[in-house]
Image (cartoon, rainbow, N blue to C red; front, side, top):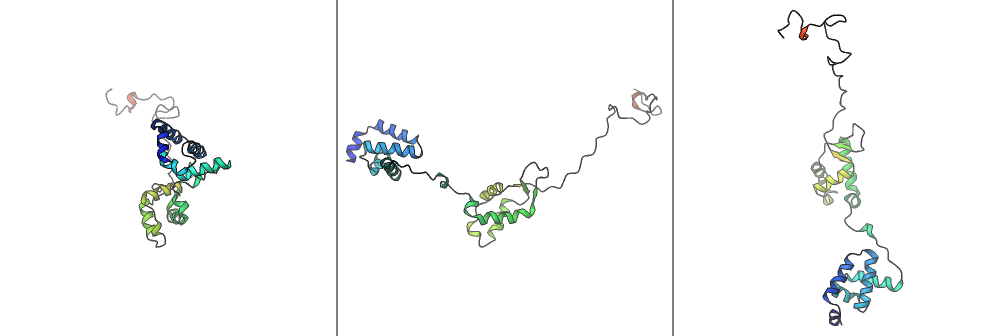
Length: 200
C-alpha cells in the first residue's frame, strides 16, 4: 500500500504539502498532518512518517484530536534547556554567598546592579573546591551569565567620589576682582604692574 501511496502523491505535491506543514505550528500543524494522513495515507501515522517525514507521535496525536474533537494543550514552557539556577538552586545560593561580601551597590543608585571584583573564573574555582557542588559546576562562561542574571557586574569596587572643588572665577566673570584692581583704580596696561611691565 505504501508503494501505491508514493505513486499517488506526485513529487511537486509532496514538496508543497511538506512546505505547508513546516509553516504551521502547534495544533494547527497536527490538524493539517491529520487531514493529509486521512487523505493520502489511509489514516496511518506510520505511512505519513515514511512518505512525508513527519514525526509519528505528532501525526497520531493529530488523528486522535480529529476523531475526538478535543485539542491537546501544548506544554511549551518545559521545552528547551533549563537555566542553571532552575536546575541547581544550590549553585545560585553558593554564588551569592561567595560574591555578596565583596559586592557594592551602584554608588549613583541609578540601577539595582551590584558591582563585584570577583571574576567568573574565581567563582568557578571556589565552587569546584566544594565536594558536594564539584560534579554540577558549569563552565566559566555559564557562571558569568549566571552572575549577570543574579544582578552582579564585574567592576572594581570604588569609594564614594569626593565633591568637586568650585572652579576659580575667570577674569571675565562679573564677580571676579584682580589684585591691585580696586574700584576706581585704573588697571595697568597688559595686566602687569607698572614696575615690571614688559613692552607691549
